[in-house]
Length: 183
Ligand code: 5GP
Ligand code: MG
Ligand code: MG
Image (cartoon, rainbow, N blue to C red):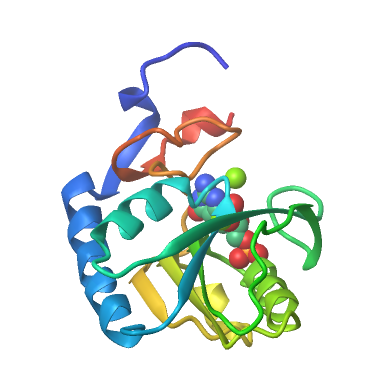
């Protein structure tokens, strides 16, 4: 990949930094309300959820503990297969606690469906999901998402933690990629 400017790789900004912050602020209000007086631990799914975790957690008023998991789903190409391997497990013991999994995007839902049942088997008080983006395909999976930033069309997006070949994660906005990047 040549060192072209990032700007020229993008077609359309779907969500600006400001829109993302505003929406996360709204979700944080709901989370504060729903978990008032409860022992909440938010679990970020590395690496894509780093930005969402950083901004969502700082928008919360309540005490919250932060932990991380890294998982890899086996599969060919860009589609996940549903077979998931834990690369980094939680440090925390979640038994009896309220767990909120935080992710940046849910596509097929296979990864989060697996993760929810894995964490569910550890005896937590509850396990819920918060995702910034959700694609239509995810609606066909038996995965119950409690907090969604936006539903988006089935397009490949980058920025704000979302990568294409490990690039573009550091963009402040979320945008679609120009076709010349893929070729
Ligand atoms: P799934 O829900 O299909 O199990 O997996 C979701 C994962 O696929 C996300 O965490 C992300 O890594 C990747 N993914 C799905 N759709 C997109 C997209 O539009 N852009 C980027 N950059 N990654 C995506
Ligand atoms: Mg993710
Ligand atoms: Mg990726």
